[in-house]
Length: 199
View 1 (cartoon, rainbow, N blue to C red):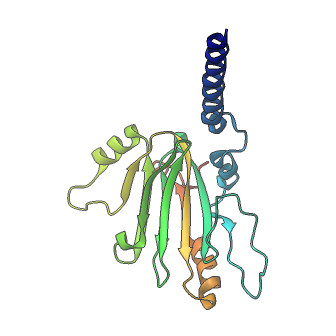
View 2: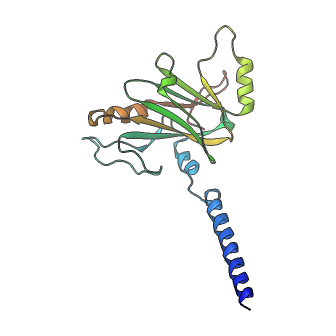
């Protein structure tokens, strides 16, 4: 009798553990307000949407934060993309403040680059599907190689996180401005105008 009780208890604990693990793993897929969904509000902008603006004398209260654990010395913005509209181009001019770009999909970050990769003070990150990447390679001019950093995305939708570090309190406004100065556009065919954001 005792052996049956122990066996039933162990079986119940194992089943409860499995259900708990499956529920935790399913949360990101079932969540209605995941990071990609929240970032979509920036799709119609031609610059990053501020997620965390550093406090300055003019703006003492930072904006609502929805990325995890922001560093109080880092200004953060996001650009959403939808590659069904064309490749996403994120262009930044580098300066005295450290800048980084990180591309994310629903499964997490898939590429990151810092201003150390800039060529002549410019950093161009182009996110493409595999088909768009192959087309871009075919269209390249052999005499003028592209300076773009081309990234093949594992999925069609996502967002790019722009971070700029303010090492000193006096650099906070410059960090906020550097995030706003980044350009986020959809590369359209040559006969179409370039569209802002991922739409």
